[in-house]
Image (cartoon, rainbow, N blue to C red):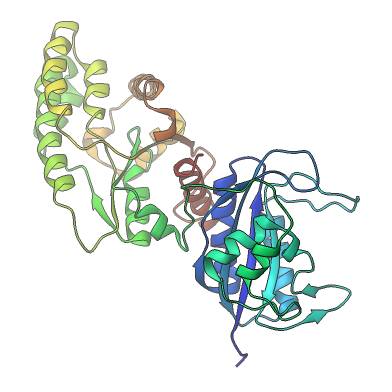
Amino acid sequence: MKEAKTIYLSLGSNLGNKLFNLQRAVLLLKKELGIILQISGVYKSPSWGFEGEDFMNACLSLETQCTAVEVLHIILKVEQEMGRKRVTEEGYQSRNIDIDLLYYGSEIIKTDELTVPHPQMHLRRFVLKPLADIAPQFYHPVLGKDTRNLLQECRDRDNLIQTNYKLYASRELLLSQLHLVAIEGNIGAGKTTLARKIAGDHNAKLVLERFADNPFLPKFYNDQSRYAFPLEMSFLADRYQQFTDDTTQFDLFKNFMVSDYDIYKSLIFAQITLQKEEFKLYRKMFNFMYKEVKKPDIYIFLYQSTDRLLENIKKRGRDYEQGINREYLEKINRGYFDFLKGFPHRQSLIIDIADLDFVDNKADYELILDKILEQVLKD
């Protein structure tokens, strides 16, 4: 068995969603290298050695059984997976991710492929300051000084600002900073399936809409004009009671809550099914209730093509749903989009899942999770 080594890495990004780039790199490095021990704060610094956007920088330490050369190759692999294209021209350029190996234990390595400790780390304040967060007394094996002394002696005087942002060692820890994630979508979009997967994989309390026993639902699909108002009022009362009960009773053993509905869907459906005067009365009741319910930290809408929705509805075989037509589904989609136009941009996310299979294709599921994290980490 290989001896475990503690390694120190520097991360930087000055393109795109910089915070998300750093976070994604942390998760990929953990997956490929080993156990994350510590992560520094996130610092903002001017571009170093060239004209470009400001960087966000951080350092982390990991315990790994990989050799130094293997670590280097994994770093390059992670950068490539994240879309970084290293260029051979001289000088520095903007990049969405930059990962450097600072220390490999206390070893001194000098080959054509790799030099450790990093030969320029003591010249870079944006490296030394975050490194001092996690390894203030670690001695540079060549210079014989610890990180604090190197920082004091560093001649780099570029303005470095510590931000309030934080990086996390796992998705679970990051998502646990949220209280409620709502996953919405049209009938048959797959919102319940995705909510179940996220809850199971990230230790979340699952909040599911319960409506199968609603006595008005089968009648509504047979005679919409007659049963629309009692159906929508029944749904509103049930959703209000269920949602309030489920979201106010937090499970201490769970990290956050994920729901396959938000109570606002009641208004979206009612606007489609009710007559004008009925809807005015309904909205008064809804507004009163909506003030009292918990609002999601992030609202995710799964967009699915109408053809796929009809296929999914047919596949799951609920008798009372088989009469749903294309026009009704398209009206629901428009209702959701109208609602999302007024929702705070930072807190809402539309994911087009027309070409995704997050049930049987792990890469598609990972893509959806990355989109959620990117939205959460918008700076």
